[in-house]
Image (cartoon, rainbow, N blue to C red):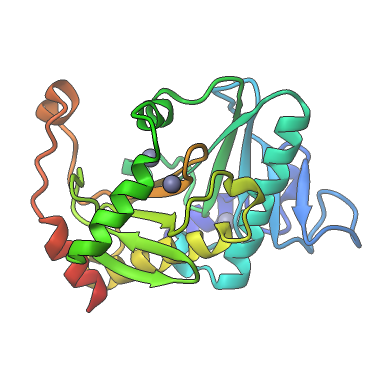
Length: 259
Ligand SMILES: [Zn+2]
Ligand SMILES: [Zn+2]
Ligand SMILES: [Zn+2]
């Protein structure tokens, strides 16, 4: 991290005037808006790409990764996502897409850990496609992965972390509730889900050094987090042919993350 990054960061506590006014902060109550004393803060995106596009600032201190956040902080982030999804639904937007970009090459324009939320009237196409198969493909998938076990990294607090069979990149991970659960925004497991992802990221940082990463939430059907550390660059064969050349077998990735 450069001194310039720290000096100019609009997300650090004390620089509340550098962002648009907050729409939510946690813990709630006990302070005036847009003043220090928050742990998680949600503001409209200053450069929105969507009509309702918000930024969730993950920490008052300058942390660069989910991997640096503890369980209680991750729970607050989950709570912020849930409260804002509730606001979106009340306003007539049934879908919220939530994601984290970490590192410039993964699309993050600022180093300070944050997530983004967009309110949508329609389900995003990739999430809709996953659901289109009928039944619950996630339940089926978890059942078969548990049978083989090779790609399972961890099972804890009713959630599973695994490296998917058709992983697109080294250490791609999926986190999902073991039992069918449709709505992450009313689930008490969403924070634990983020903790699973943060734990995987800590292991990846230990194995490979800090790496950019993308993480997103698929919020309908059987909710899950998909998480792609970016050790490789997607090029023509991935983008044009839809063929992902994964240089690390998911079984080997799962083994490395377990050990
Ligand atoms: Zn900062
Ligand atoms: Zn299911
Ligand atoms: Zn998905």
